[in-house]
Length: 310
Image 1 (cartoon, rainbow, N blue to C red):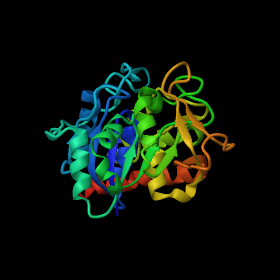
Image 2: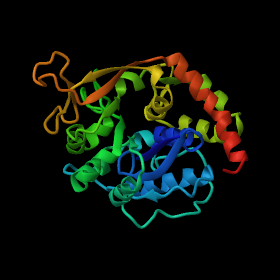
Image 3: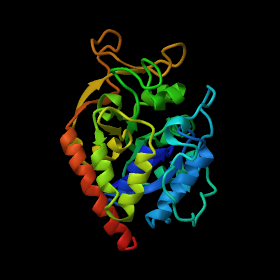
Image 4: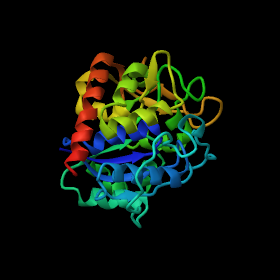
C-alpha cells in the first residue's frame, strides 16, 4: 500500500479523486487535510467529511487547514464548482467532525510517526504544505515526494499563463518548489487531455450508488471542454497507481509570484538559468485511452467497497 497524506479543496474533481482513493486497496490514506481554494475552507472541510461518510471511511482523520493564501487575497472558484463545492447530489448526513488539530500540525504529527517516508498529494493550493515546510523543516526527510495537481507549461486556465491552484497561492507554490523535496507536477499539459466523454459520465450514473453520486456531481461541474469534462485532480491518484500512463520530463520550475504573470510555472527548457539543476518531474503527455478505461473500471470497485461496509 502507498501511505499518503491527501491535501484537498473539494471541489468536484477533488471529490472524484478522493472517491477513487478512498475505495482503492493500494492506497493508505493516513490523513485528509482541507484548504481554501475551490470554495472556502469551511466548505472544503465539510466536503471531505461528506465523502468519508459516504464511503464508510470515518476512521480517517480530517484536519482543517488554511483559510486564505499566505499573502494574497482569497478568491474561490464557486462559479465552476458551485456554491457548496459539491453540488448535484444529496449526501448522507455527516457523522463525524474534523479533528481538533490544524492541518499543518496534523501533517507534522503524521510524518513524525511515519516508519517510512510518505507521499503528500495536493489537489488544491499548496498553502498548508508551504506552512509545513516553513514550520517543520526537520521533517522534510520523512516526505518521499509531493504529487501536485497544478501548473502548466502550455498556458493557464485563470490567466493566459497561470493554472488555478498555483495562481491561488503562488507564494506557497514558490516555497514548495524550492523545498528540495522531490516533486511530480501534474498540470494542465495532461489534465486537459484526460477528458471523460459526456457519454461515459452519463453511463456511470446507472452503476450503483457510487456511480450515481459521481455522475451527478460531474454533471454539475462547470469545467467543460469539447467532447467531455477534464477531471484534473483525478490524475494525481491515477499517476500514483499507473505512472506508466504518463510521460514525464525533468525540469527546473520557477514560480512567478506577482504581476500580470503571477501563478505561472516556468520551466527552464533551454537550461538558461538553472545551471543544470532540476526540481520537478513534469507530466507532459498521457495515454488518454488508458486513463478513461482505468477510470470506468473504478466505479464498480467503489460500489463493491461500499457494499462490503469497509
